[in-house]
Length: 203
Image (cartoon, rainbow, N blue to C red; front, top):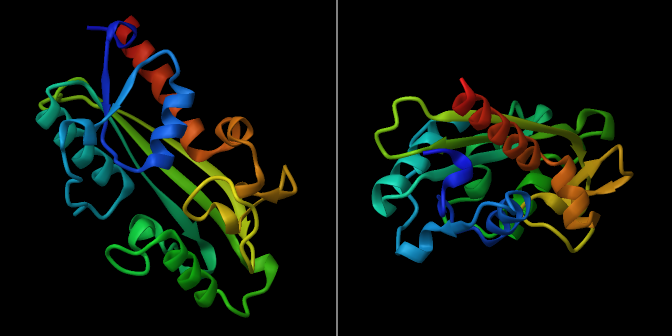
């Protein structure tokens, strides 16, 4: 089986924002969210992005009997010693909304000057041909920026409204989907992943 011949790839996520972004980037490969198979999110017990991405990909491949892509991503803020990190989606607690997480982040950074609000989005992307794949393909993407002191913009999701993109002079939530996908951690990780898969197939 080759990546280009796969009819469907299950995405180990039910996050609508992630699904839109990944499908837009992998436009030649039909992506089916695991929710279409009534698969619920696996518990993210890993302490790193890599561990959690593998957990999610293996669970989706096992439950759906299809090749699977999973990502684990988050925001790493220097002034907070790397937090929110792997718990970015539940920074304000299990079941927290995007707004809850944003509010907690801005509160934690209250009074921190701009020059110390450096941060980056990190995404680890994993592709598994099947649940017992002994050699999953793993790629990483990093997007550097800093954290604003208030939210701006209406696009994107998660922490996008407070993530300042220096090269664009605006927040991530002010970027079009096309521009964001060309710059983002997820876009970089997916591009790297597809290149690694093709190299593996050609070896």
